[in-house]
Image (cartoon, rainbow, N blue to C red; front, top):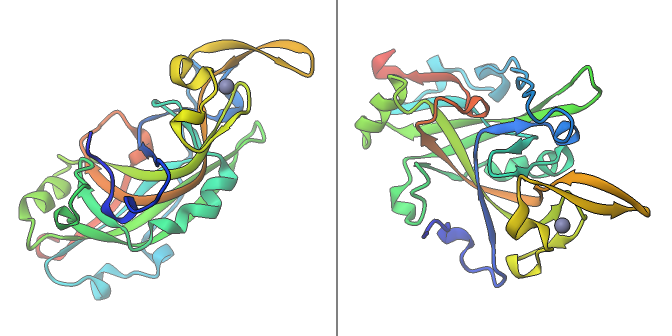
Length: 242
Ligand SMILES: [Zn+2]
């Protein structure tokens, strides 16, 4: 695996790199409703939310796209993205490169840039807050016409973010780890599974996932993944084909 971003390689500690994956459920309901996946609310996001009018702001030869980059849920990698952490960090998406299928080791392979990002949230009937981050991307369609066509034709129909995180907290025991060597006994072997822990002297069953702390979103990739409703593409615009 050589999927680290050059922008972050200089950091001295061992980075924890996370990639987007289909979202399974909300953190608060992961134990009780694990099999009952609630649909992520679709926020009414449009070009105007980015103060962007494709008819006047789009440059020739560039493709523009709005997509949902991440939601505050527990995903199929059993990485959880708490609301407060995502709200605090989503602007790190701004100015970051766009790739294809996380081929992000060489900045020369960037296909575009994230122009802006916004956060939207919905309070569900259960009282749980469900948040999502939406990004506006500008892709270089003139230099990469195959990519542009694949996006416009819906062949590359999703996006997937890349992030390094300052650390993670185990959902079962609450242990914080800033690198894999600091993990508790649960994360390396039991991610996604149930385990028994003692809380306030009581024995409880808890599912194991990692809550990501202080994410730094460093890329957004075009991916083919029709199953991932979290990586919804909401709008796309390419002048020469419009
Ligand atoms: Zn643990």
